[in-house]
Length: 263
Length: 345
Image (cartoon, rainbow over all chains, first blue to last red; front, side):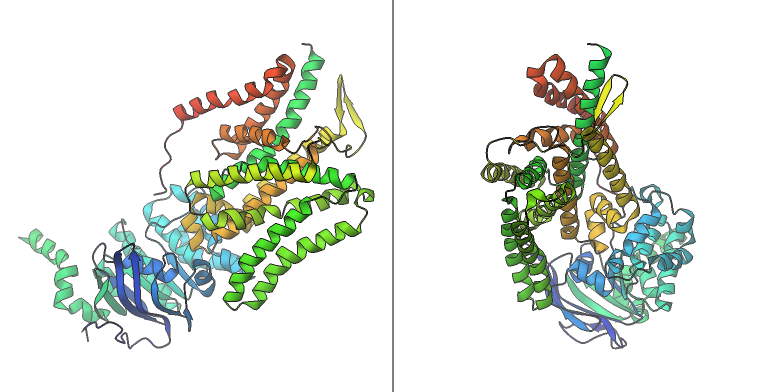
């Protein structure tokens, strides 16, 4: 059932063993509030998506959860509450963020980029990156072919694969993806979404922020609609996909295009 | 000028150039990782040389007290934070490294007859005193303003440089010091007498450069520093904290500075304020590399060393002027040839 959200209302009841529970998260840039009392839950092994228009606060929300931005609210990750999340500790505890801009190390080789994804594990004495590297290469054979190439010289799709692969090197419990399909050709977008579903099959929980609402709702278990910094709607992804308001606001454009093309 | 003079000048130039190369590499590294222009690099050279000289004259080097004070401040800050967060073990670790270690070092130096120790041990003790000041300095002065504009960081560097020169005068006095050579032999190559100390400088510099190359190319920590230099945000998302990268970088820079000082102490008389000129020449070399390219900085350092040596023969009164004037054509050339660097993606 799709629901109009009241602040702090319990939701995403399907989520057993929540990996991430965010309650009443607020972020402000100076006097401007970018995120107001946003709450969401990601269950173990779930894909949860946050959709919404540009500037709704989606990226802000991920940055605050990761500790890149300061915030107020309650963030519980993997069973314990974070007072003020701090990036290094969140990475150490098993959360990784693939940012919208990828933030690769352009002049370094593909393999060096990947290995650096395991830095925090290496620091904590878990030196299994050689094995993880093979697993990531198995998932992205293209990266193995290009292992010695400088990351900055690759195509947009390959760079996105590298960004996801690098995040997986940390063996995350929760993978957060910010607009993974942004600027990519449809074929590559489909490949990225195929990999996202494959990752869920392997037990990685995923928080996916997307403007491509159609694709996101197809792969997700549960979805939130973020508008002007607030959770406007939420529900199981397939129900939201059938919700007339969502269709009109976020899925409608494609339909209109088709209608225009067919006339 | 005949051939033998040219050879002698070249030898001088290359020896000095090797030291400038080390300093230039450290400057490029510090700037790339932390955006700090490390003006006080030269003071680490002087502190290294003069700490060794003090030990050899049997005096307890006053620099160890500076280390104790800096360590106490770090302990108060970081230990206090850890205690507040209820991390007692972490607080103990902070205190052990930042307060226990300097005090133990001071006690050991006080108890030993330092002037009778073998040179190698004296050198190690010198490094043990001066090098930890690097990361402590980062913690105290730069970490709280790590995201400040480059200009603010530069102002802090200038302030620290002035403070360190003043403290140097207090610690070491106004007289210059020269330490005995590491070993007393010389190599005859045709008309050229190569002193042992020259060989020491060249061999140690070469080893250090190779070592740094391996560190940055092969180890994960080295790669993490490079990654931080290339993309700070990306590195942070991998769990490479800017604080860790900054401290590690300052450790390396302080190590390079202090070791350079120890190496040149038998060649040149070092005063409390000599470091500035040496560091500035390393800086000219680093500028030739655009504060970004390690190989260009190293080549630039050799050029600076050679130019300085020949200038001191032809126009010794103007040798500094000639070396620093080199910056003007280099800046012109760079501003004409280099393109504005775009943000990644």
